[in-house]
Structure formats: C-alpha cells, structure tokens
Image (cartoon, rainbow, N blue to C red):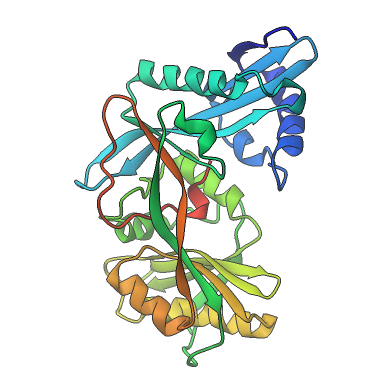
Length: 306
C-alpha cells in the first residue's frame, strides 16, 4: 500500500469527507457542524491515496476557561477518521501529529480532544482528565414548579442571538467552559438542533435559559444558564417549564448536564432527586506551549463538542 499523503482540505473534499465520517463514526457524523465553520478548510487536514480521501483530522481554535480565571488558547481536535482500508499503518498518529504541528506554529497553549478510545492518543502525549458533566437516573416530577413566564421555541439557526450574556455570566469560574465566539454559537445551534429552547426574561433582557428535549422516555437537559441578575427562583422556573413538557411526553428517566456548583446542584436536586452524577473520562489534553490548568469545577457541555 502506498503511504497516504497529508495535505490541507480543499473544496472538492467536502463530499468525500462526509462519506468517510458516515462510515467511520457511530452514529454517523453529520458534516453540518463542520460546514458552519467558514475557515473549515484551513482547520482540516486530509490523508489522500490513489483511491481518494482515506483520513481526516479537524483542529479548531477555542478559548477555554482555566482554574486561574484566565482564558487559554486551546487547539480542539475532532473528526479523527481513518478509512478501514488504510488502518494499521499509523495514519491516525500522523494526522494528529500534523494538526498538533499547526497548533504549535500558531502558539496554542494546549490541545483538547474527547474520545472513547484513549489508548489511540496516549502515544501522542495526551493525558486523560475526569469531570462530572451530567447526572442521570429515574425521574418523576418532584413538585409542581410553575414554568410561567418561560417562552418556548425550537433550537434553530439564529435562536441563540440574545443568550450570550446569560451564558457567559453563568460560566464564570467554570473550568473548561468556552468563551463562545460567533462560530461557537453557530456550531452550538447545529449540535442542539431539534431540542427546545426555554427562555426567561426580566425587564426585557434574558435572565436565563435551558435547552432540553426528550430521547425516547428519557428527558435531556443539554444546557442551563442563569444570569447574575436573575431572581433566586430562575432555575426552578426554567426547569418547571421543562418538567411540564416532560410530564406530557411520559418521561421517566433523565440526563441533565449542569456545572457542578452550588446553585445548579441545588436546582438539580429539587428537580430530579433520583439523578446521580456519572463520571466522564472521555476528555484528554496535551501540553503545547504549556500545561493546562484544570483544577476546580469542570464542565464541558454537549453544545461545545467539535
């Protein structure tokens, strides 16, 4: 077998990449999030042999919070894919090395990825970290918290335009939480597409929101954010609206992703007393300019995966 050549992605690679991702990932990876990135070609490296595209890696710059309150310039690595016919020759390692090289050239602080196969990346210098990202378990409505005043819409393009202030205030001091750019929000809308957006207003401004829905008989809260100026009952009101819809849908289990800090945990306990935190060890980091600083409450939500 001729060794595949690595190069930057080109417009003509879009369809082959979509085909590769649909074959390699379970469930199949849609290209929609990648297509939302106007600089996707410069962020993507492909492996090509005589038969076409046989591998890919995507490296996206993100600004993530660290334990000292500062923001790190992070190289977020995703879409590491190798066609079955090209496996067993170290191609994934070559692709990862190539994207790490581009990150080092632009001066990124460290690299981040999420994976179910950590052994693939340890030889490239990645180390596993742990967090408690979500709580799950049996659910029934614990109390009739009213969702009065909450507006409901579907998560679609442009739906998050007024949410940034509430999001940023809610993530102060939360390690790994991104400072979301316009691109981050566009990608979040793709990842959360099909879920419902619950928004609470106060004096004409967004005081909090939740993104939630159902997956069969399981209720899902993908994101919850409350602004500093929100009233003490804002979380209960938002989750009350979610609970109304879950009851109507016959939900009996839950999967709730919130940062593990006091106000959010208290709201979680009141809303879903049977939910238990599940450990998440899918995250890995690798130092580039320096080591990551990840002490403290860690949270990285579904909206920000890449």
